[in-house]
Length: 287
Image (cartoon, rainbow, N blue to C red; front, top):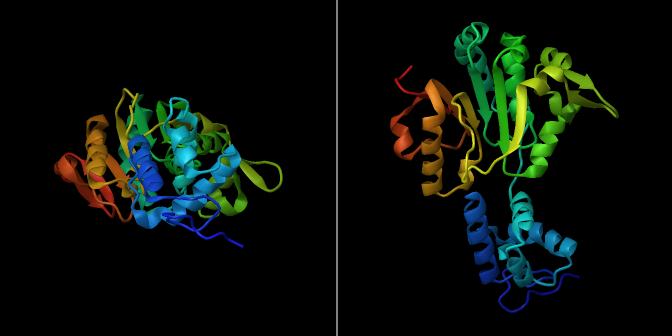
């Protein structure tokens, strides 16, 4: 039987969860990851973080907030962020982006790469790796020798668990089904228990790193293609504008940015990024 909520508790459950607890958690999540939570998310926050309280042996959300805010709380801030973010992904999600990458963007990049030039792509919220591996399969479909050339895909995510999964590159056959079968069967190797693992060429093309989009970006070179899809929707308007504005200085002239289906480029970056297709933007002059 679920206990009644304690005095001032926002949600019924075994732990008292006050408006002040929610405010502190929302403030910490925004400061750490740029994610904005409104009080309508209280039940979701409770259900996901109650598991953390049980795991840590804590008796209240007040204790949990004190832990996360403390000097020793970095690891738990990361665990809290992972618990409160939704890693929805699949191979070739929003397939029109991969069609555009293959047909409009890659011909010039193929020519540059074969002439000895540098080509860089970035999956800026890679989740468990299905997006960057979809990018890699698309690149290999038109440039089979890409892994031997100066072509690389950076894959980053705030969640170290997702980065580790992406680096491992192990997926079920069901997960791979949205990808073209002729490609994934060529570039993935069969593993145990019906699983498939990214092969040598995919691993050579992709590098997985932990990165917070509102933190420091250590990358020095510029990118020809950036996928940043279905992540800034969780940011407030000001944070969205800052992220878009941080992309433009690290994009090569004419570079392409792909964003989520419910997102729009806003703020100062909108003057530099022009629509090149459905949720697709090109840096510089209009295509």
